[in-house]
Image 1: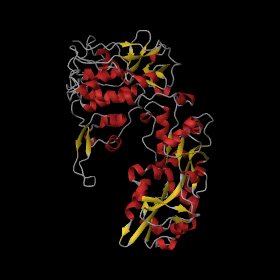
Image 2: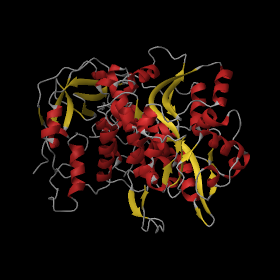
Image 3: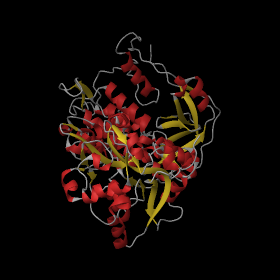
Image 4: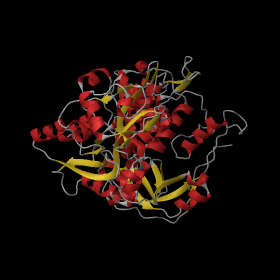
Length: 586
């Protein structure tokens, strides 16, 4: 029996493509984005998810499928070679695929075949001449070139200029296109070696280069072993060849990997899972299919109707901010784009407060999400550089002080906080209305956003007391939480004191159990709550801001983001980020 043909039944009538191209930033040189409305998409989501998962785009004239396509927010989107700009596209549901060597569902290998079926339904990986998937066979260089170029919809005549590739070879067109687009280079002897097996790192590099050529991922940048280990969690990143490190960083945690149990961990009382890339191992057809399936599902980042309305399909602002405000960046990307968490322009993290302000002042970023007012040295730097900062409130937040959950103390006055951190005036909690227990005050480093809050509310032009600064400085927002947790002592009895930002404290409960192990102190008799922060009765209430240079043009992406964040959809992002919306959100 031959492999079932993956032809398709059109569910909706032919649909004309939208204005072309939608966004130059969403495509590489020679590629564009097309889109068209597709009314049946949401109905399929609700009634037939299996069919929904097989929605693709195809050209309306000759019904050629477009693998790099997705349904999202009422439209079908596709990334295609620019030469197809004038062609209409339409949505269709691909037939379910199968292979002649596929076992039934009771076999433990069934789901390996299902992965290959998923990629076959996207017209990227096909069976052999007998309709077999052969998932555990190694994939050759010829096959690898064919599948990655099918993925981005490119082929051409010729042999790519390789001695061992003939124009009549089934893979010649893919190899020629791959060389043209910088996906392959061949060997110094002028050969491609099409039948040689591909290593995992070679296939990863070919995939990353193809995605970059189509503008789906950013150009591959140099990356270090430490970069790759941090981004991907791969333990053996030092075994990856230097030329492939950038590709692993671009593919992020979707790389081919094996998961194994590590050494026994006393703290967790178990054997933690550890990921290994084994980059020089040959890639199997199944592993290639898994990688392609993941990147096609997650790296196509098409814009929502709202993103188009604000021009974010053409350009997103370059965003930075404090550690605590990274959830804002995650929320806006995930709500504005399909698979926005993996959008090519989304930063992998935020800088710390001070560093992000420096980047803004130096013109390296367009805007910040900032939970604190700029510190005095930031304002001095802005003045020195001849620029002026503009702060636009988008959410509620507040500075908070906390101690160990076992501490009976309930309240501090603003005067007491100043006395603690400027003068180191108290050694015992009983001097400020608490129990008979030693007081261990923790502070933050001077270039942190929390220190800027201390300057604003308590320091009155002074520095944190030298003894406190030298002995109990927490170097990050998360460290101050854990430092205070573990500073509690039994003999002699003592409790710690720390400070941070209200919504960061709440959001970190899932990681550090802050609500159980720590407790918030009231300030001048008012406890920090959503209500007291929103109505301003809590003395240390303030806002979270979008910060930009006042010189930002009127319709720049940064100003459009500020405008968006004050809409109902933007305030929903505020709530999703775990902060207090300025306006009611349904």
